[in-house]
Image (cartoon, rainbow, N blue to C red; front, side):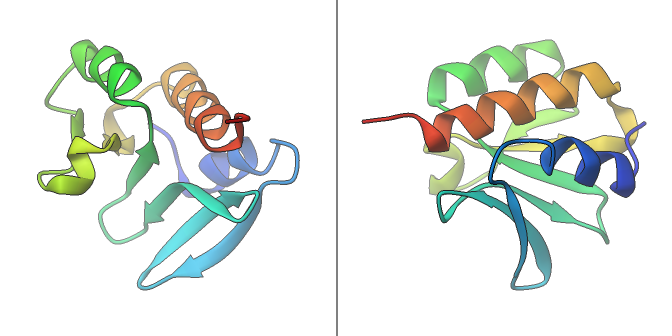
Length: 105
């Protein structure tokens, strides 16, 4: 299980990553773009992945890693149930999301 402090520690270890409020959630941003949000109430993270990376992570276990059930999910936004994930999985996913929003186009 990943707790809030561990999630924050991982996210803020990325270069230039910052934490900001985002409606009722916490957002984590790089280059002014959100790459992850955290819902304290649901203890769930939502990460911005490419559609292909989303597919790879969801293949691990669709009950605990799954696309948002709307058009945002079709754009790669993916939910991670933090109570059921090992640290290594969420670290890999966060790194992937961070790279997705910071890559040069």
